[in-house]
Length: 168
View 1: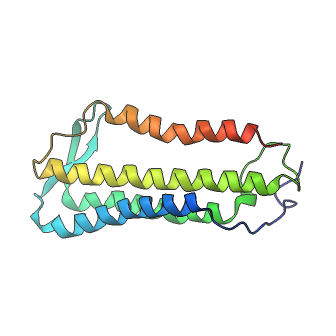
View 2: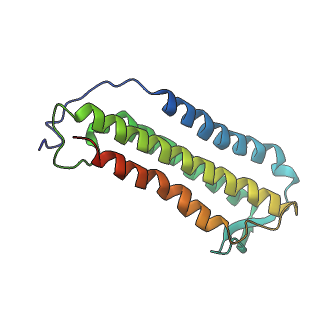
View 3: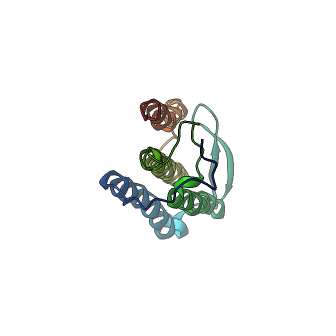
């Protein structure tokens, strides 16, 4: 088993799927941010800022609080982009060695990439839905949203664990 300091530093080009995920995630993120900035002055002073497990608004706040979601998104982008850049620092099973490191790194980096972009899509969806509720264009997410978010968030992790077990 290689400890983190002994692990090889391997330059692995980004895959097409990573580029596609980034285009989708960043489009949702920046699209929702632009939408917020365009409509900001048309929003009422009080907007939904939190939802309960049933997708119902359970806290209202000032419209400035809507910028918390893009701020969280920016933190996720910075933090997970750094993790993607240094896959040798990720947590790996003991069977990691110099011959399978490239496969482990690529697999782990792709998982980070998917998780980052799924998070951006979810945050953008919450932001847009909050704007829609504030403008009375929608009634909220409904009970389906939380189970869907959990399913969408866990699916890449479960698939990732299964794929990682196949690496020799």
